[in-house]
Amino acid sequence: MKISFNGACREVTGSCILIESGETKFLVDCGMFQGNSSNKNLEDFSFDPKEIDFVLLTHAHLDHCGRLPKLFAEGFCGRVYSTAPTRDLTEIILLDALKVAQIEGRLFCAPLFTESDILSLGNFFTCLKYGEEKSINENVRIRMRDSGHILGSSIFEVWINDKGKEKKLVFSGDLGNPPAPIVNDPEFISGADAVFVESTYGDRLHESKEQGIEVLRQTIQETIKKGGVLMIPVFALERTQELLYTLNDFIENGKVGDISVFLDSPLAIKATGIYKQYADFYDKESKELISKGDDLFDFEGLEVIRNEAQAGKVDKTMPPKIILAGSGMFEGGKIKGYLKKYLGNSANTLLIISFQPKGSLGSNLLQGEKFIEIDRAKIKVKAETKSIFAFSSHGDRTFLVNWIEAINKPFPKKIFIIHGEEESSLSFAQALDGISKGDSIIPKYKEFYEI
Image (cartoon, rainbow, N blue to C red; front, top):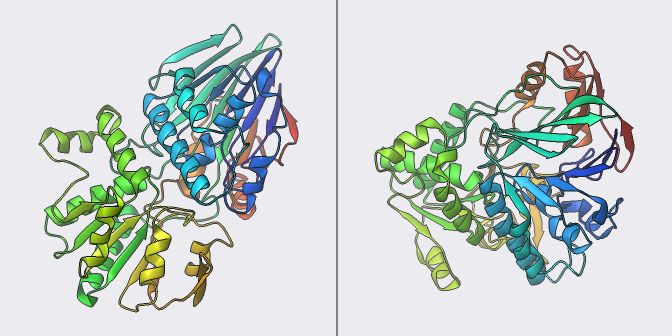
């Protein structure tokens, strides 16, 4: 059996793993490259899309699903296996990415990547429930487990009959950061021959969720006291919904003073609508709140900006106020406009709660840059920049080690460490040295490995 990695090798973007066993070829994810690696989206696939039998899609983030239309446009005509929320979220994520690319006048994929390509994808999805086994062909069967990352996100267990011997592969996708509201905690897996595990935060520990929530509450209180603006760049999936859930608790239970809250992210608004359609995927606590009549994502003082006509209300509303705006990594979205307006005021605060790649705008702000450039405009930074990583939707090093350690009977002979910056992947590999009975491998881009 041959394995090759067509993204997310020593970087956190472009997830795409090719598995070849006998006559069967399939992918786990087909994600877009972002940031400094975005030019890779224009490269030809290192395989023929027409020869791919099926795709296992772990979840709907762009770095995992973003090249699916390119795959179809170049000849793939198989099935995509995922949960129903992942299918629905993937469509809005891809349509938004195409819109952003068109507005910014850049091509992030092949010219054949069109809106019709995206809209046709839904016809090729086969949606499964967690725990449901599915035989793909006579040699491959799969089972999806909850990865606790975003709504509908999955771990894939894959059993392959390879030359008469069954081998079990486990693909972590992105693993969540428990305990988190709304979604369930990530499931643990029993036994594997090989594991493919993310390492986004393989080199660090998060503060506890309780600490992070308290820092957020204190930051809001400070913003109220200063009469300032609190800007929070958010991802449309999971991060927005978790923040709305937390703000709902703060405001409805009197944990903070009066403050206006604006959600200005068309994609996050659509995603929240999809979240509401799949309450059966929620954790026990969220289901109990809903049963009592609580709308998890709405509260007094929240204004949802649905069009440009409403956008002017944000500026007209006097501080203190909170602005949740996309995107969490400062790529496109509405947040840049607010940064240009409000970073120059020392009464304001920028709160970063998402992973920021090295060299990115967010990373530079976290490092204390006093002058930044946005859309060719040079801005002097006077606002305070703070960070909270307890809201990360990725597990930290301790969780990742515990997750791997739980995979026994048998313990995997090979552990492929992916989806992490090189330093993070190396640190995680070192952390596994004390418990690993198998080889920890940090694969290289487009290289082949045997199992």
